Length: 303
Image 1 (cartoon, one colour):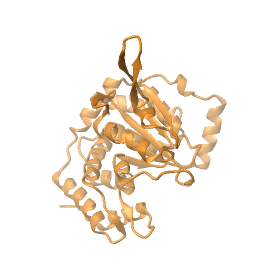
Image 2 (image 1 turned 45 degrees about the vertical axis):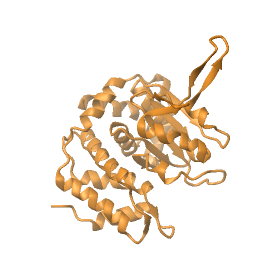
Image 3 (image 1 turned 90 degrees about the horizontal axis):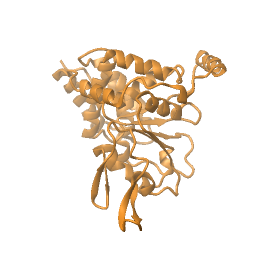
Image 4 (image 1 turned 90 degrees about the vertical axis):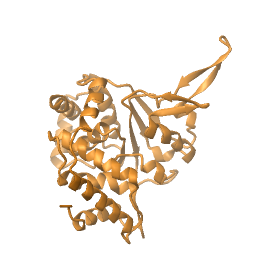
C-alpha cells in the first residue's frame, strides 16, 4: 500500500510542479472519503490537478462548468421519454463519475448547488423517488475564485460542511515557476499520464486508512479544539459535529500517507486550517484561518 501511495504522488508531480502540500491535502480528502474545495485565482492548476488525479486512478472524469443557467438536472441527470420503448429511460448526468470537477461552483444558483448535497454525503442521487448509486470511489473537487464575486452565489454552510478539505494552490515560488517553464519545453500532458493505481486500489486504501489508530488523548484534543470554536467570541458559528468527524478521518489519512499506523498531534495541527476554516463563520469580518491558528495555540493537547 505504501508503494502505491508513493507511485500516485510521483505521477501527480509529473504535471503539478512544486505543490507537494496541495497534492497531500487532496489525497487526504480522497483517502478519507471526503471532497476537496479549491479556492484560488484562475490559472494556478486547479483543473489540471483534478484531471491528473482521475487519470492516475484510472477513473471516470467529468467536468461541470457552473453558470447561473445551469440546472440541477444538468448535474444529476434526468428521466427521458423513449417513444420506441414507450417508457422513461434514465439519462445519467456528469455526477455519475469517479472524479467530478465542479468548476467555479459559486457561479451556479443555490438550486443547482443543492443538487450536489445528497450525492456528496450519501453517494447516491434520487431521481423521481428512485435512488441511484454513483460510481465508487466518488470524489468531488470544486473550485471557486476568492477574489471575483460579481455574478456569484456564496455557498451555504450546508454545502461548505460537505467538503472535507479546503485549500489554495497559491502562486508558485520563483524556482518553481522556472521549473514550470522548463517542463513546458518538453511537457507531460495529462493525456500522456498512465494510470498508476486502480479504482479497487483506491477503495482498498480507503479501508486501510480507517484502521489507523487514534488514541483517546488525540480524540479529546480534537473535541476540545472543536468546542473552542463554538465558544470563541470571534466566531459567529462554530464547527459542526460533521467537522469533528472529518478532522479525525483526515488525520487518519494523513498518518497513513506519512507511513504511520497512528495519529499524532502534529497531524491535527497541520490539517486544522484546511479542515475547519471553511466550516466556521467569523464574526465582524475576521479571518477564519487566523482564528484557527489562534485556537491551535491556545487549546492544550489532552494528556
